[in-house]
Length: 433
Ligand SMILES: Cc1cc2nc3c(=O)[nH]c(=O)nc-3n(C[C@H](O)[C@H](O)[C@H](O)COP(=O)(O)OP(=O)(O)OC[C@H]3O[C@@H](n4cnc5c(N)ncnc54)[C@H](O)[C@@H]3O)c2cc1C
Image (tube, rainbow, N blue to C red; front, side, top):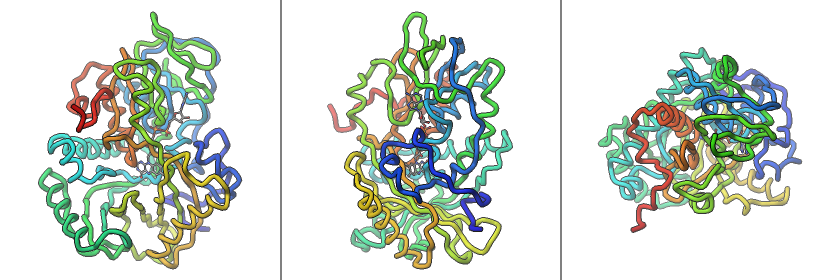
């Protein structure tokens, strides 16, 4: 028996079915050890769409973003249809490292320089509000999802930048974030990493599929539906309906939550222009056992670009900890195509982990894709008439996916929300005239 993330009990290893995999994962389809432990938690199965129907809102994509959107709308008495071309919560949501944090890929000082204090603060406040919302939903649905508040540490890397200059910058970032209302402090030695860093209080971690299970169960029924193996094919106008699996779903409103952006219609931004504002990066992850209980449960990110990240869990059973460690991101399409080189990418990550924890034993390897925007902010908002899109979450898809769900609900219900303005789909680059 080995401990797994949070309270995960021992599981049977299985290969990820091909249709759940991202293109990068398909490259590794013959790599027997590729395995994200979250997928061991089974979720209910849902039928494929086999007839026409009518609802209020169609949500395309059943990862955390789509599931949360459908759940929040249903709670407001809205009839929803949630569609996924494969299985629910199996794509990126099943391959994440499940840090819940407001600390973004771009540092707070970079965000303030690019967008000003108000926008940078709103961006981080959005992440903080999303962690609170996840906590609220887990309590309301009774999800047993290993949700726990833990600190997060942004720290100087063990290799790379000059330590002296990095130290000063970290100190300034800690002051700036505190000034903007976040509970942070500079510390000389981050646990496990042995480097200076910033400590962020009240971040969190959870098990994504355990969290989403009760939400999914609550969506289906009473005029609302969840469909798997149901592919979005396009939109018919007047009256608006979504085409999927050769059938039509009449609706008032469409939410696109496919992560890798899919534009149902050209609107304030054309699909081609929109695509030019994203890049996809493949990130490599290891899960490893470490003997004893010597490190506090926490989240970690170093200040390299691309950065390495870690999450340490202490399962109640056993006398060991489980560390999730990842990084070595490469632009998708430019990742190693041959098996030996893919092994090489994991070997680099393993060497970095062993530099920090020499006695770690790697038990899981997996990878996935992050969608990175050209200005570091997500795209969350309406693109076309009665069409809402949510994407570009960089490494913060669970907090920003949750925030997107709150915004999609409020937009559909005609409620005002202060975050609408910051994440507009038709915003320009900050340096554009
Ligand atoms: C290695 C790694 C580590 C990460 N770590 C973190 C982390 O620690 N914290 C964090 O917050 N975020 C993290 N992320 C990012 C996060 O996992 C994603 O941003 C998040 O899962 C996106 O959720 P989603 O629901 O938007 O998309 P997904 O989970 O990818 O779901 C989109 C769904 O849309 C479906 N779909 C696509 N096209 C169609 C179509 N035409 N018709 C019907 N369905 C369709 C897909 O099948 C899929 O199920 C990480 C990502 C990776 C790869």
